[in-house]
Length: 279
Image 1 (cartoon, rainbow, N blue to C red):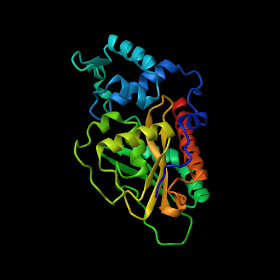
Image 2: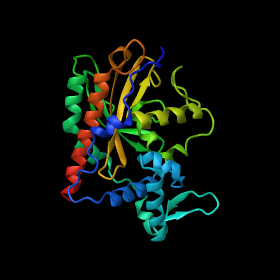
Image 3: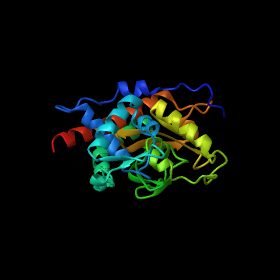
């Protein structure tokens, strides 16, 4: 099925619904610096300016100014030959995740259940673990059919909506992917690294990711990123189910489901913001 004429929800629509910049007493430049440091702390930890700015949706000039300051104080180092950035010696302890799976699960529980009820689909909340997605929370779809909870399972990062969202915002992890063809789970799986890179660029622009029979041939998925107060993507929430439940006849995600999933992601992010502001 062709998705050429799908209605596209651009990133501006996603951010219009978000909560960025609403932390009482927050200083935006510090939040952005923290997000850059955490981005460098994931994956290989050596990134180009363009990769950092695209991952955090920052203008290159803004990202470069923050990186220059962080370099001057020793928090970031720049390779003179390649121009790539990495964490400085003084911040080696930042090479850990800022939000563990248990916290992400606790924050998302109040919002994942209503999403399942409204969408009629199963809900998964995931976090990046190496080159896989760890399912930290699962809500059954609201029907009496036999279902199996995926909590604790690992999903392929390139063949699922959850994985694409997390990979799109983790350029360090992208660099760890094999240079050759990726594992094919179905005939629709994106196995070409060049095609995957183009898909991830589109995911960042839209603010959500779609999987259409790429992991399981009769299943589709839709996911959106969960943002921390500083703008870092710390997890993803999504729905999955039969192809015709998630997508229309043209293979496009149903607009009401896109809104429901992104609204849920924003709500979990606000929950995170509230919990962190009280610390």
